[in-house]
Amino acid sequence: DGGITQSPKYLFRKEGQNVTLSCEQNLNHDAMYWYRQDPGQGLRLIYYSQIVNDFQKGDIAEGYSVSREKKESFPLTVTSAQKNPTAFYLCASSITGLATGELFFGEGSRLTVL
Amino acid sequence: QKEVEQDPGPLSVPEGAIVSLNCTYSNSAFQYFMWYRQYSRKGPELLMYTYSSGNKEDGRFTAQVDKSSKYISLFIRDSQPSDSATYLCAMGGAQKLVFGQGTRLTINP
Image 1: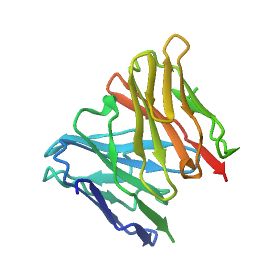
Image 2: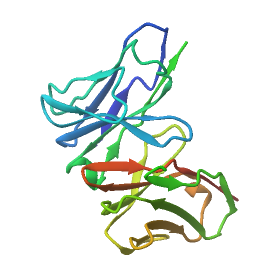
Image 3: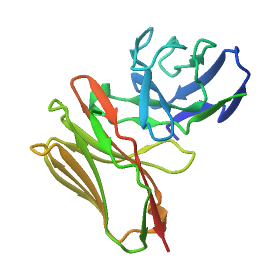
């Protein structure tokens, strides 16, 4: 069954700690994305990658980092520099580029900072 | 002014009603128009996809795009309790994809 797997579903972090969210896809898609969802704000793009070993900043990249060493994997690290990290994080992939909008999403990871 | 405006609701209607959800936008470069459905604590799933202006129908769902008015709509006929979810509009073009805030919809049995 093809899809996107995000882990963990729930994560608690103390202030000052870095955490890494995992995203794996078996859809053979070239493009992958990370979004942040906050109540009343829709989805905001953090980082995206169109091919392996290349990625670009989205609208709210500060305090986050990513890597794309394999086509299937696009992990997101939330660093201690992110001032307000509590949010729902969504990973997505697509066959075509960002603007065409046909994204497949994972089930999300909810991060809470204690 | 936001590029995409969507009324967050919440919207509550009885089962069987026709539901109308709407978004407006300001960027003329948008050519791809989508509606995503998101159930509670899940990721969004693509529900309807339209390129440029016009209507598209899929079962009980109809998507309309009016580029002259910069206005898109999603209609749900014979609404069911299983349609209760948050509906997000999204618009793409000029190398960007912008999501609306989402409208929370509840269908009451």
